[in-house]
Length: 342
Ligand code: NAP
Ligand code: GDD
Image 1 (cartoon, helix red, strand yellow):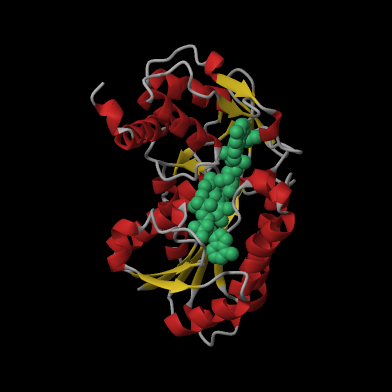
Image 2: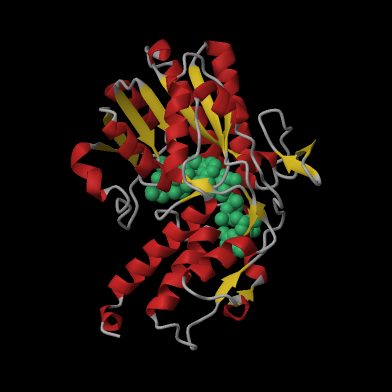
């Protein structure tokens, strides 16, 4: 089997490439030219994969690589994936996150192998935005999202993802292309981008610990601590992507843990893991990190993925937080050899 991964240099791309290699795939990764190195997440597997230069906003490069590489499967993980940035760069976000998907779908349609290629698109729980359903819990009503929850996107990013989501459905219905979308809720890891809130927190903690918990260390500046997210580990979620593509029928699935925690709760567990109970004086609330429109609450019910694909998350929220903190503490210590002797 041969797979193309758009977005191989990102968090999910790196885990998915590892998974496909383990399963014996030939992996082709598409990377764009940028002025700084971007291969750090896949350096350890570079000898085993083929890298091709390309950009999903360039329709020619997309169709050329799909024709030349003759893949069995294509995974599109490429996007301008930061919600806050999408308010500042809405046009770029639209071109990459929506337009890029159209380029891939059209390239598959005219590849001459339309019926031989299976396509996975990285959709997002951000598409639900402000919407949720209600069901009775033990003590109170539970708010949740699943495949039947109507979409109400709250950012240029989420609107672009929703356009792409509908394109995927439309190309599946119109041209019979095997195309599926994973509606993935937030998933993090030791490889998470440093601008996302979880990694921003754990990286700061790592550097703070490596400084010897120096009182002069600059504060951790954050925005809305009350937002709630359904946070899983990326390793579990890339397995869900692959399982969707292996199913005989293309379909859309929610992938989530079914639990939700606030940013504040993430902070509690992360700081406690390095022995700090009262972290409040170390954090400054900065309006810079608030968004013009917020998604307050996400809790996904992955019942369909469990029933149809047999997918289950294996890594708990607490394990996720502790793994991220441990990794960033270790990295920061190694970068501060002067502190190793202390
Ligand atoms: P990420 O770490 O930000 O990776 C994004 C990838 O897209 C990078 O490899 C990036 O390349 C690439 N890319 C950006 N613009 C491109 C362009 N014009 N042409 C080609 N490649 C381009 O994101 P992630 O967390 O791995 O997420 C993977 C996908 O899942 C994204 O589409 C994201 O929107 C979606 N998603 C993520 C989550 C989550 O919680 N992680 C949840 C739901 C959906 P560079 O390295 O060159 O920047
Ligand atoms: N990034 C960031 N930085 N977020 C902060 C900060 C901060 O300093 N302070 C508070 N937050 C809040 C945000 O307002 C948001 O409510 C929450 O923390 C999570 O923000 P992010 O980690 O940036 O993730 P996201 O939920 O907006 O988007 C991620 O998940 C989506 C799936 O739901 C991204 O991975 C998207 O690509 C993905 O689609």
